[in-house]
Image (cartoon, rainbow, N blue to C red):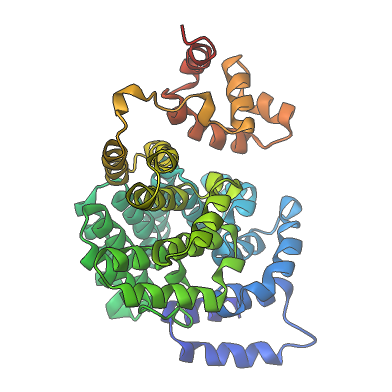
Length: 430
């Protein structure tokens, strides 16, 4: 049944799911828990994902003690479109380490896929690229060539985000050339995402609109094409910038009617950001600013930075330059942390247009850190290792490492060695 689920997903069309649904209904007394969860979160989460939210919490709580690598990967698969891969990181890393030590390569690959996707969303782009290259190598050396497209996709979206446009398009074309003759429609659809992102980064919003719309037309969240939720903001922003106001509003209305915001904090951020782009409504901006003040903006670094940039652009043109600068400066720090050069350049242009001289603004500093990040930075500056910090703060050592990965660019340093000077210079600006 899990294999059939994946085969249907690769087909990306409602008719592929009919035999799966018939078989699922025949299971007595009921489907196994992870299969039941995945059947609601993976095929068509826009329509069935919310009903699985109570169940996923219970299943994710089993991961710390879970030893079965197959179950771990399947829980990760069920978590993708509810944006819960972060809850699977520790168990996924266990499988990666087992794979590196000679463990099952298929589960090694599954864990790498999930880590790459989460890395992209939370802004750990260096790690995403490294793990994607590792995934391709494991595919090539262990006879799993079918799964290589996943890692081409992850490399492509990071390349697009970082402004390596030729590379992004080439990787997307490689996916398409492999997928179409084999009928792997999901992979062919995925390839439109890096193309849309690259086109946006180049300022070619007509092309960005067409690629995003190829995954799901404006005003529609296509059935059984779950990845269309990953390009909703791209489609709306490109539509707004190319004068396709009707299409932009239709897509926002489709998002609101489906209630995608309920799926996760990331989906809420994307839906609210899209609403603020197209609705001439102070309430939409107020809702968005409330979200950006919360934890969603910290976690979903790329999406939050893009939404901040779009909001800052709008505020500069319609309201208040100081309010615009606040969001633009936060976007600047986020894009800098990911080395998202096209977006960083656009943000700098907006800051200059707002009347801010960038030379007068220090990059980052403790004021840009969250309370937990500042605590971790100070402990690291004192000489404690990630493991020691983790023990003191009751975190995992990888969580500490992830925080430091974000802290360094905020403080304008590249390693732990620069933390003490950075913190002391801000404590004593003389």
